[in-house]
Image (cartoon, rainbow, N blue to C red; front, side):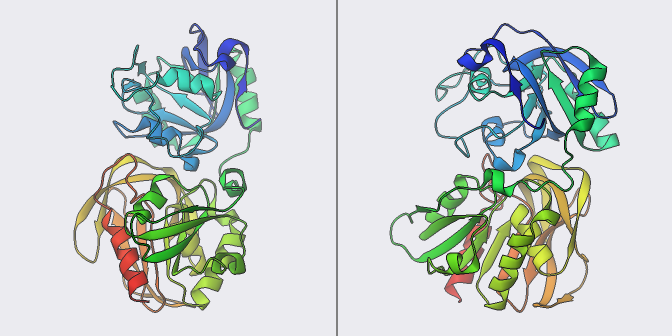
Length: 384
């Protein structure tokens, strides 16, 4: 079982009275609390997100598919849920873990409370958890599978189901989050360029950032062929964020190699960065506990500027940080690095028009330090 099993009144859209709930990690560590959101049971990879704000954008980010999010901010839900900030049409997180949920929403933009939204989407959560202790445990032991249950208090039984659930390593999830049909996001004002975006789990804000720069974006399913991408007459191709293990994305890697051979401008973010890395011949690996949140420091090695950036990734590209690496497509340098742990955060190609970053320059829900990367992409299209 990989998704939530929801029971009782939780499907009505109105929060049920809190019941006892447990969170069981695959190593047996157990936390007790109260149900928050839908009543039921869910399984996924337990990860912690360090953002103090932006929980609505986080929950609706397809990159969090099959993950149980632990919010490190102790107080969650006080701005409620609105109609403008969602990054997709649903909540993708498998579960939600909070310490102190707000009793009521206090923002003028709120349409309703966060718990009501979790119930409406069948998302099983738990509150009253010592999220600081849980986060420290995940930092020390690494991200791992977990189960959240408000219908079964038997720790051993829940843990057995956790151990039977699929791990994130080897997970091929793009087909579960991609758009089933192509769609177009028009440019704001005069259309200057056309971009084909490969939807590996794209966030809604990304095409809007492109549109602000006069770029019309054709969002295409992850299974699209090179011919289908090129049929829209793109000036460049965008590789989106998304969930899962990049080692499983053989189709996307082959697609990018075909684009590089044709010298089509390519810009990738997050999962798209990992796809470009693999297409260039680099490997990928799973991080111990990943980078998730909107406060991750990254250095732009070309300018020396330090950016505070938004991240959600559990895998990284294995590329030499120093010097120029020769690849089948020419020289490649590491353009950005994480200042917390030295992880590769960006790639820049010298001989083909391609680059990528590991983080989210669309800045939903902030910060905006990396917004200039969309200007760089536009400049790359202009130079074609």
